Length: 401
Image (cartoon, rainbow, N blue to C red; front, side, top):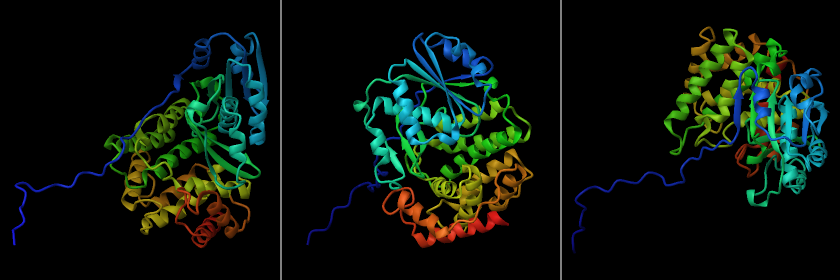
């Protein structure tokens, strides 16, 4: 028998193959006093549509230069009316415009961004309606299928959502909130101007900061793959520290808004699992069924989910990474408890975020969540209705205490 020939040097296994991570952001951001005027001055004259939050009557004055421009139409949009059909109607008004300005909170900016996408691809509305409450995630058409559409300028009047720079938008369809993802949803230009946030009350500023913190944390918890550059984790921890430190020390809305935008514009998301933030999908259903805003639903769920992470349920994230993220939070706010679960409860309470939730059926919530985001879909795949029923029941019980 011939002896096997051994190689002179051991053969080392190659690292997992896969495409490189991609980072691309198209939004140009203007910052500081006068940012709105500067952003508008950069646009060519033409027919424009100005969509403002109807609950903020001072907004047309904030962007008065545009209101006085020729061929400009003003539309006041109530955030409570931001459903799919609202975006469909808006898209009809955008057909002959050169650019559109969305001035308001996340709901208004999402509705206008979606209207622009529907202008370029009208068939997307049918795609969003398809399936009722399933699936919750809708991806837009290929770029090659898009028709003409106006440029989009976003002027946020709140902080924390980062809707002004995000390529995703949420929309209500028949009582179900869906997540639409497409590059055209990101604004061409964003103006972060103190004039637009000067009336933002302190509780809303803190809530927005906490929204940005939880968005970072929930994306950070999953173990990174080989596509994640080390700088992404470093930047995420730095942002967590700065968001807390800036807010606690009385930072301005502009400072918090810039940090929030960086959670999307920066390298923190490069190479991460797009569906790692399980809390968002769970809170999405709780918010819709209970009829409460997103953040009260989120802060009710986060302690329960984080408890499961610390107990070793890796589907929600890695315990060591949760501790590292929380250590970064405490670097900006050292008085918080070292335990992440106790700490997030104390932080939400001290900042006045969260409230008692109405009584809802946890099993009905779980059925909705699995239908919209699980059962083979990557967002909540692998979670049973029974498991999520227990999770919702615990969160609702905690919210009533």
